[in-house]
Length: 287
Image 1 (cartoon, rainbow, N blue to C red):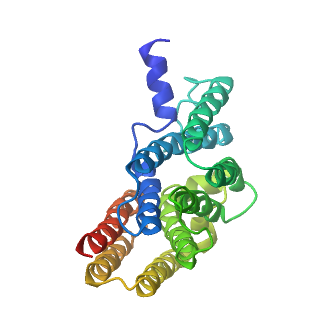
Image 2: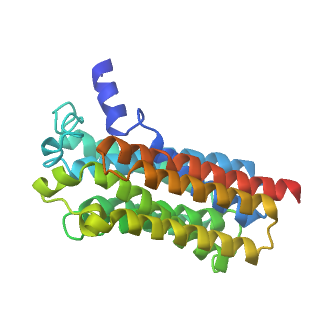
């Protein structure tokens, strides 16, 4: 295999664009810290961080396979490995399978309950890319897929799978994911209409920014509620206030619906995830 082919595979798996891995990583770390009530087991941190990288890559591969016939119609995606012919459909499916096998090997290092939960996560990752053809809410399915690491992390860490804060965190992250992925969908909104691809950006229309702000508000409300339940102190709430300011900055940034500014608002969510994690980590450190 020559270097050009290797580069095409890496691009297909988005190793050159790690933002998706970061956005999947932060809620996973939140869950590990909450489940343990402080610093989680180090081997689980390694397993889940590797799993985030592998399964996010697998999700990108199956997403591009699902979009192989429409990516060429969208300005931002027409040069991706599949529409450009640098990777064949068969090669993409084999690559996806290999990544899933690696991910499954990682989850085998945990417990039976976590292994069983991983099958739901895989199903969500496979289903999501195809939802944009059948529903205007594919971002909701992405929110579910990007949140499923939360119950998995709780399970692996020995946390109670029925804990109220687990599912509050799950819903909060799903709201946040729908919000930032709507910014992402706003970048391609006009191209998606031509390609008959559905999204919340198209569904929300002129109310897109208002609904994004509502979703972000719900995210912060649920995270604040978790803090109240667990009797968190001021560092956690300071982090949520900073997140609120970051959300307002994103809104102001994207107010003209300019593609580049909407994409920047999407990227800026990495800082939100980091901020929440620092609030959690500092809370346990102070205690």
